[in-house]
Amino acid sequence: MALLRIGSRGSQLALWQANHIKALLEHRGHHVEIEIIKTTGDRVTDVALAQVGTKGMFTKEIEEALSENRVGLAVHSLKDLPTEIPTGFEIVAITTREDARDVFCSRKYGSMKDLPSRARVGTSSLRRQAQLKALRPDLDIHPLRGNVDTRLRKLEAGEYDAVILAAAGLNRLGKRECIRQVLPAKLMCPAAGQGALAIEIRKNDAGVRRHVIFLDDDAARLTTTCERALLNQMGGGCQVPIGALAEVVHGRLHLEAVVARPDGTKVLRESGDGDDPVKLGELVGEALLRQGGDAILREVYGKAVATPQQP
Picture 1 (tube, one colour):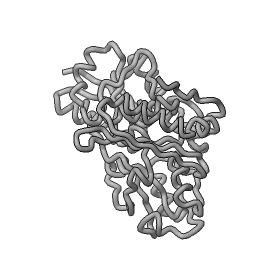
Picture 2 (tube, rainbow, N blue to C red; picture 1 turned 90 degrees about the vertical axis):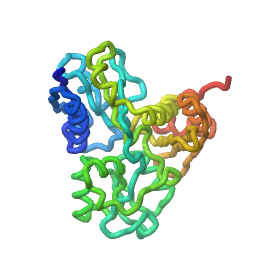
Picture 3 (cartoon, one colour; picture 1 turned 30 degrees about the horizontal axis):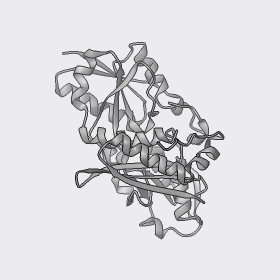
Picture 4 (cartoon, rainbow, N blue to C red; picture 1 turned 135 degrees about the horizontal axis):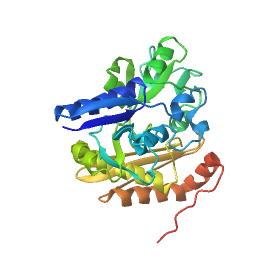
């Protein structure tokens, strides 16, 4: 069978993900190797993600390795991928999705409402920060970078009273013991694509496509396509205060979405139902922009975001 080389970041979670895909491919008889690639996002660890401002900060170097044929496929957390995939590449598979929600982790407190005033809470994203500040403006929110282990060590050391993390990463690494509360989307809307893995290949590589297409999961593809359509409609990247979660409810797609000012003083929420994932994502995105999301994103980007014209 074919020798397949996977490009991956070197964090514990990224390697779990790459090894998970490796095992699935090996089960089909392939020989698989993993090449660890350091990305811009891995190198810049002393600055909040939203301030780095580099599109594809966790993917650019891996795509360069793909382009140079050093690797045949890349395994990404889908939420790290820009909505516009560079020319010459494609997302050939989105794997079965883990729990997409965020979770509240603490040593001392059982839920968000149990936190005392001025409690120190760590988070790495503007999206979480904005929703936290809207829910609990009395909390002290502090940036928290690093891999899952680093963040949990800081929590255990008492540097934070609580941290907000993705359920998917903790589930995959078997570190659920720190979870005190699973946060519903109406409380803390997750990032578009959270909990899903994306398999990226060179666009015209029919050989690799044939070997990995079995990894594509219809439900994950449907829901994440909807979420990323919303993100794309709003002109958002992966480090902006936009959340989106699509689920199949009674046979139809239901989308919950949010855009918020980073200081939490304005939080806009919108939801919708439909059958076409792209159309639903675009319609809910348009509705958020019309509500005032355009002004919020202008503040974040420092430039205008074009509000779509009504047909």
